[in-house]
Every structure is written in structure tokens, then in C-alpha cells.
Length: 346
Ligand code: KG4
Ligand code: ZN
Image (cartoon, rainbow, N blue to C red; front, side, top):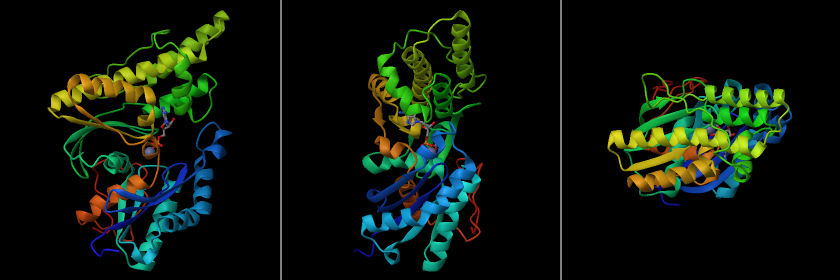
């Protein structure tokens, strides 16, 4: 072990995945352990916060131990501990934050709180050494839809955000309405391959004064109205056509806003992040649009798009280099905004 190497033990528990990872020098993923609770929540059609917290408590120590073992790194060899402290479900976040604080205290190692979205964005650095700020990043997950200008590591300017539902939330709600179940995103992605994206024209919402903002609740209502009308008329619906047409409406808007941002800001690099970024149709459409505009396209592998701790470790590395350290009063901040100071202990 080289003494200048930085080993970050990262913990993520903001929603329904208990995850821990060991990341070397901000890029080398020595381990990335994810214990998913999806099967547990499927019966309820979505994440039940109390169940999520309880499961995180049961799993967290085991997941951390596994991550260390797989990485072949001992707790003593860890340089610092990074943990997602917001946004997310407060009870779920608290489990990771408490575990990180306990370890940092016992080992006398630096503690670094990380914004969950900063983690998602940082996932792009894992496989793309050449990607450096500034660039535009489209962040689309179950809880967030943001169009962000990454001005430096850990420095963000939010150009646009959703006014209502997040993109992933819309995927999940529409999937439930057409009987695909939870989690909806991957299921819509798959079933759309058999559908016609032009079969039904769903609206592409334009939002008031900020042309980078998104709105997906109108689209969700349009799908529900379409389903109701079909039911009233006694017409069969094609699950694949509805899924493909809905998805096309989401993808069109995401691509249009992203390319506008890239052009307006005069940047040549574009990245995507978050669970919805693993959508194969969105990726294909963005690759084509970037090619047309002569812009470099970057995306993490799907495993680094959905919630994981490796991305928190990468973000933690950059914050560590900047000298960011948090105190033992670090707390779970369920509504933490991107770029907002995580003030504890500063
Ligand atoms: O980033 P993530 O794992 O958790 C949050 O931070 O929210 O994102 C989860 C979201 C869910 O809404 C899920 O349906 C969506 O990402 N998702 C997808 C795909 N895979 C996951 N949406 C569309 N297509 C996919 N292939
Ligand atoms: Zn996430």
C-alpha cells in the first residue's frame, strides 16, 4: 500500500438500497456491494419508508464488512469515510449516517457527508478518465430531474429542474397504471422494445419562464386519461404501445432540453446520471443527438446509474481532496438541495 493512496469507504442508504464500497484514488472501484430491497417493496407497489429503515439497520454492518473484505482493505487502512447525508428518506439516510459516524469516531478517520446527486454525477468519473468539468449533466432519477452545469468538482449550477414529478417517478407511476408493477423504469424500457413509439401522441410539456425546467405530471395524467377512455370504450390497450409512446415523450423532452443547454452554454461535454440514465432508449437518443451536435457523450455503466456506494466514494474522494470534513453533528438532511452547504462541523 502506497502512503499517498486514498481509500474511501463509502456508504449509501438514502432509499431502498443498502450499499457500501471501497474506492481507491477516486476511480478504482475495489468493491461495490449493493443489497437491494426491491423484492420487499414490490408487494406494496413502491418503497415503504419504515420497512426500508428497518432493513437498512439489519443489513448495514454486513454490507460494510463485505465491501471491505472484497476490496482486501482493513478498516485501519481506510483514509476517510464518505456517506450520503441527503436528500432521501430521513429514516433510511439516518442508518447510513449513524454507521459512518460511529466508524469515523471509533477509527479517528475523517467523515465526509455527500449529496446523493453529487454521487450520481460523480459516477461518470469512474469509467471516463478524460471527463473533467465544466460539462452539462442531465440527472434523472426516481426523486430528481435536474439539468446541471458542473462548473468544477463538487460545484454546480442548476439550469433546470422538474416542477412536479421526477422522470423516474413518472416511469414508476405509468408502469403501475398499465399493470407492469414496481419498479417501473426497467420494465417500461424492456416492454417498449415491442411497442410503437408513434402509436399514441402524448404531450411534451413546455414550462413557463425557465425553458430548461421539466414537468412530467401532465404527461402522466395524459396516459391515465388515455387508459380511462380506452376502458370506457371497451377498447383493448397495448401495453407495449403505451409504454413506448410514453417513453418517447419523456425521452424527446430530456434530449431537447439537454441539447439546448449544451449549445447555450457553449460546452462540448455532456454526461447523464441517475437511475433513469440506464434507460436504453434515452441513452441511444442522447448518443445520436450528441453526435449530431459534435458533443462528447458520457454515461456511467448501468450498475453505476442506479443507487450504489461506489459513486459516493468517488464524490467523497474529490471532497476529501478539497479538504471537506464534517463533524459528528452531521445529520440526515432529507431535503438537501444540490450545492447547499452541508454545514455540520465546518
Ligand atoms: O437513482 P435511482 O436508483 O434512485 C433515486 O435516487 O431515485 O433511480 C431509481 C429510478 C426509479 O424510478 C426507476 O424506475 C428508474 O430509476 N429506472 C429506470 C430504469 N432503471 C431504473 N427508468 C427508466 N428506464 C430504466 N431502464
Ligand atoms: Zn439515486
